[in-house]
Image 1 (cartoon, rainbow, N blue to C red):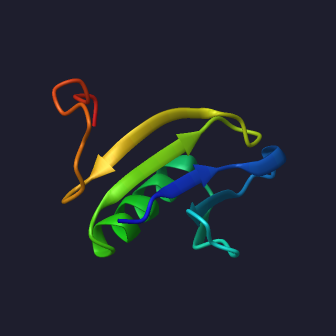
Image 2: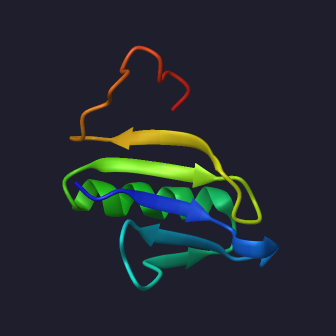
Length: 81
């Protein structure tokens, strides 16, 4: 189950979807919402996993979503997505 990160390094205006331990960017998008959607699709196609959304400018993780069939460590608490 691979994990994906959605980040906007240095406020570049381009949101990037990066797979854990990958050398290259998996996808790019013009908005955070589009990048998050792409990351969730990629995670679902790969058997599930975590999608971690970072703050703009390459900041720390501000949100994390589990994509089925991944195992959510806290299923009752993640009700906003």
